[in-house]
Length: 286
DNA sequence: GGTTCTCTGCCGC
DNA sequence: GCGGCAGAGAACC
Image: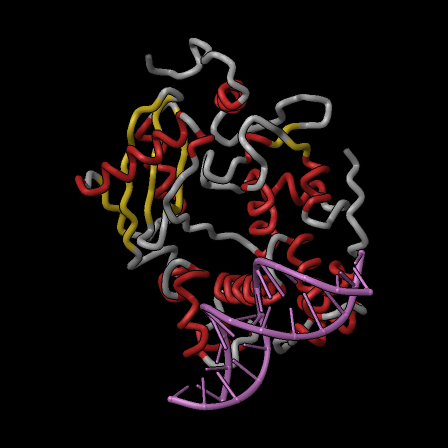
């Protein structure tokens, strides 16, 4: 277990440097501060964080924009404050980071179009939502209406489009994946989180079906053994059931801990992934 | 459109 | 574990 986080104080320091830096830091500079060659530092950093230094830095910048926008700052100011040299550069990459324009983001998703559908699977109702970039929500529950309300709460201003017939094939693919996670999901995901959350989610996606990790193990895997609570928080913030397999995180003592979509569903997912027969009475439906 | 930087794979120590 | 290099691709101007 307590896999020692192989000599990564350098990485932690680099992360702090990136956080504090006003302007982008070149790889060579980070590496020399870490006392490593650029190529080796790059490898070590990615192994520890799940992101390359460059990806990590842009995730941080996007965090800052989100923070500035959430604080009600003007869009141009927010982009500038976050460390983007020019707004055109920000807009080039923003679709990927925010999933929508800054104006739309600030307005709670207004103008964004989110297609969704609710289906039945063996775990009850399942909602799948797509932002145009990728799947932005997969949620499970007993009551389909509640799932839709939850989506609406999350994107209060977005235009939610349901019942799109062209959407069925994709939903079927997601349902198939939920029924058998080991098959993998061959669809792009629209994952949106803070830099830290994205690291945790990356690490989660590397946990193979049928196995579990503890929160502290996960914290070690992202190179921050002291951040167990933050890791648990990031797991809890996951919006993509099964695709980001937060159900594979359990307490060290074997306790299942919690699950956004119901601890019974977590139990059932884990049973299936271990090749055990499905249990009756888990799903709300039949 | 050219240059610089990033990123990865591979090999050597 | 670490360095270095090559080649492809992305970022930047």
